[in-house]
Image 1: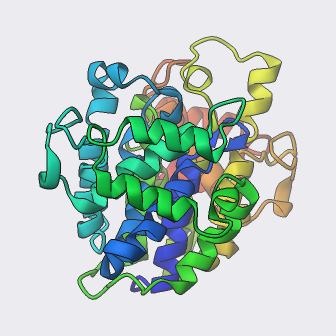
Image 2: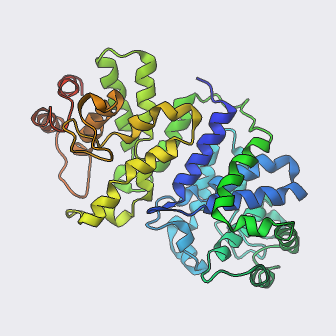
Image 3: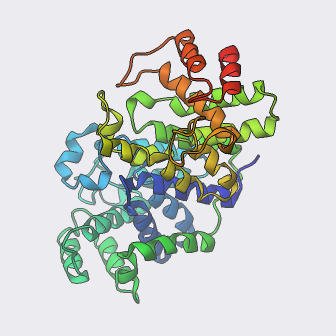
Length: 399
C-alpha cells in the first residue's frame, strides 16, 4: 500500500502529539511551534510552508530519550552538557531524512538550535549560514518556552524578552517577523490557547500544499516502522521491542491461518502498540522494584494513550482496540477495559502473547532474561488465564 497524502499528514501529526504527552497532559509544544513557524513562513518562504510546518511538528523528535520532556530543559548551559540535548537536532534531522519526503525539513530541524551570533549548537553556525527554516524554528521554539512561564507573560513581556535576544539568538529580521505575526489580528490570543492550537493544526494541514510523495517508495509498514523506532528510543532497553513484537504478531497470525492482509494489519498495530508509553515517566518504566499503586495506575494508562494517538490516523482506526488491547487478559483481569475471552479483539489476543514473549526474552530492569523455552513454559502455564489457549499453543510451536 503506497503512502497517501492524508495518511502521511495524520501520521506525522500523531507522532508529534505522542512526543508532547507528558504523563497525563498534552503539552502541544511541537504543534504550537509548527503553527507559528508556518504562519511566519507565509511572509518570507511561502513555497516552503509545508516543509516548515512538518519541521515544526518533528523538530524535537531527536530528544525522545530524555528522562523528561524537552521543554523542562530551559537552561542553555545544560543543552551543551547533555549529549542527548546537544545532538537532538542532528538526530531529529536523521529521522526526518528517513521519512523520505521530509529531506528539506530535515535541514531545518538540524539548525533549529543554532544562534545568529554563532553561540548555538550542534555546529556553531553563524548568521546566514543557518538554514532560514531553522532560524524560523529557533524563534518559534523560544516563543513557546516563554509562553509556558507561570504566571503567564503578556505580549509586551514576551516582546521585551525577544527584543533582548535580537542580534544574538536570532536576527533582526526574525524578531520583526515574529512581532508582526503575533500582532496580526487575534493570533497571539489563539496561539497561547491549547484548545485553539488543537483546532488550528488540522485546519493548516488541509490548507497546505500536500507533501511531495513522488520520491517516497515507502509502503505503509515502512513509515510505521520509523514511528516504532522513535517509540522504542524512549528507553534504551526497549530498542527493537516494537519491531520484534510486530514480527512475532505477524508470524502467529500467519500460523493461525489468517490472510496476508489481516496479518499485515495486526503487524502494523503491533508496531504502534507502545506509542502511549512515551507519556509514562522514565523512572517508572525503568524501575527495578515493584510499582506503587499510583505508579501502576499511571502505567495502566499507556494503552489508552496509544489508542488516542492511533485514532488520529483515519486509515488506522480499525486498529485502535487491537493496539490498545495488548494488556487485556483472557480471564478478564487485564487493562484498560477488563475485557475477557472472545470480547478481546483477535489481534490484541495475538499481540498479548507476542508482547509477553518478547518481554520475557529481552533485557528488562525488573526481571532476568528467560530463554525461549522458559518463556514458552510460561505461555503454557498461563494459557486460559492470561493468554488465549489456542494462541498460546500456536506460539509454543512457532516462536
